[in-house]
Length: 195
Image (tube, rainbow, N blue to C red):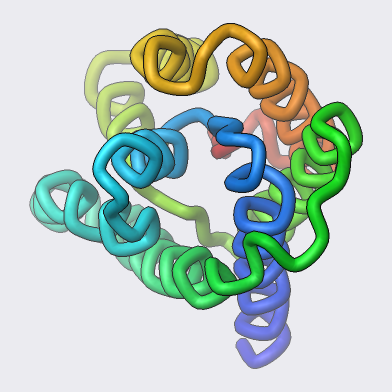
């Protein structure tokens, strides 16, 4: 139990650092609810972690009704990762790297962080939680649903961050997916998500 909690903390710290040190300085996006939180941050100046929590509340209410184990497995990951995203925001201007390097390192941090959280049977929740609920009730492939949701988030964000940051974001998200896949390849068949 304690080992799983420590892995969850480390994963959340990596997500928080990856987002703030490498994504935010260049206005990069991630997919899913983290991406939505970043869109609200870039557009309105809202705290991304707090935005993620607020927008996830209806999804968690639905999960509590429809799938209690999924709710309990994801809720602590949501709170901890969102807290870390806002906690490390003060470091966003600490040392700004070139965009391509930031996209790769940030993607690696976020991908490894999410992978560790999934290995601890948790997740950042949000839109992935929605995809899992839809997948379980409809039989649709969860990975494909996540891809569709992430694509919609990116397309919405394109007009806010511009083409250059959008292209770097695609590379960053691919890096996230690569590192998450490495850490969770043995769990893919169980329906675990990447974001």
